[in-house]
Length: 98
Image (cartoon, rainbow, N blue to C red):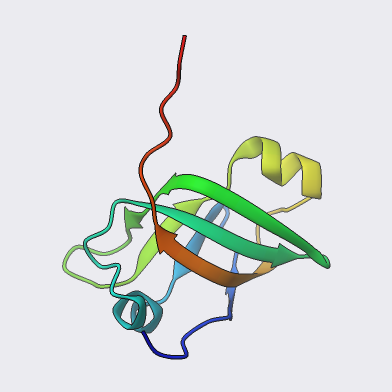
């Protein structure tokens, strides 16, 4: 793993954040489905656990993840804001009990 983070990324209108291809390749997470992500927004450090990495372009290496609604509402994150991706590491999907 090289020195590929932190990186700034815009929040898209669909509440997704792009993880650039160079970061995906550097971290070796191209084939990973779920990750734990730490982002920074407005001076706050926010940890997202078990988020799904989505493929943004067929055959491309870049990936996207969605910031959950409760996190967006709690911290006031809106479309076109910029977040800083501090860390990304593989994780297992969150299991819901009920």
